Image (tube, rainbow, N blue to C red; front, side, top):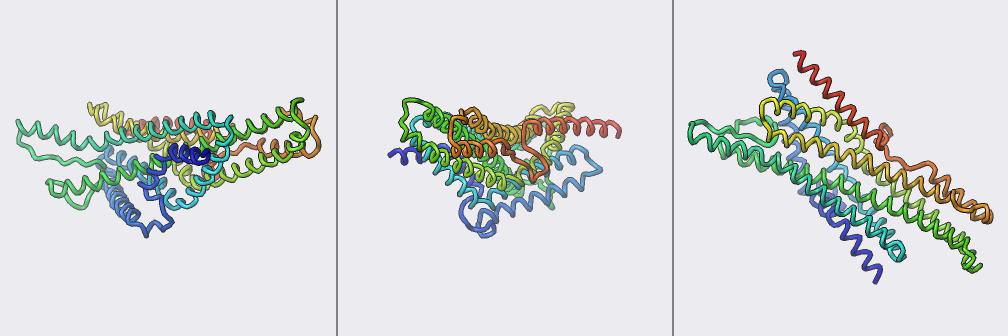
Length: 405
């Protein structure tokens, strides 16, 4: 009965993440090219990429604003694509990690003292996942609604002035045909809506999944610390029988095995998210810089509604970097706390075997596990500061170059 309840709880807390993974194509063992959704995704992304690059090249020396907007869209699109394809190609490994965490959850849920902590942490992660997804949807809606806002303005203006409609699209894409009537405008908008929805799914599924995985890994490291403190407390108590004290070595061995299993899971998570970390750390500062530049230009000409799109774009990029760096720092801290708990034990009172097990726990935990982007960048709070600082530097440099022209 407890196992069934624990499984339902775990499935509930990860239900939105699983739904987003399925929507993005990260389900099944088939290769990406053998899935209809994968083929459609690649076709849309190819059309978008060619159109964006064409727009940038054509306007490189003609229109600075369109060029900057196009480069920012390309970087953001490639980042979202990297996230989505990484999860699609690693779908099998992701399922194995989620199943392993499910087994751990059911095992630790049987201990009544753990349930309050487990449910509290999992509920917070679940609510944060919903909040982040809804926030991304609302921010994405700004891009989706802007072309229709422009059309409505032209419609009301056309009642007094007879002008042709300027069909504005969601993305700054240069198509090989003119969009000058409804017949080709509607298909183009359908394709662009589909592409931006895919980008939204890739973005939300990756960021929320990483947040959930980190929350559960931190939770299990915290439970390890509690179990270790509880075992030592029971061992040093005079009310505990000698028979129970003899089982301390076996219980410590189980803690060591659980610690090794958690470290292996951390390494597997890092392997899946490594290309995502690398792409994010590379382009986030530059993309935020381009968003700030566009906001500055739009405010200068009074396009206040349009600034909401670029502002939300920059906020989402900064938030995802904060998720990666902040959650990675939390996990590193939890791995180190286990070493402190082992060191604080009255290990001088124990026998040689127990002391050796405590030493192993301390040695394994003293070197905190840290996520890296292919070994180039360490994901921690100082790295987040570096991203913000670099974005400010790029923004200042870009403004200087624009003023010199």
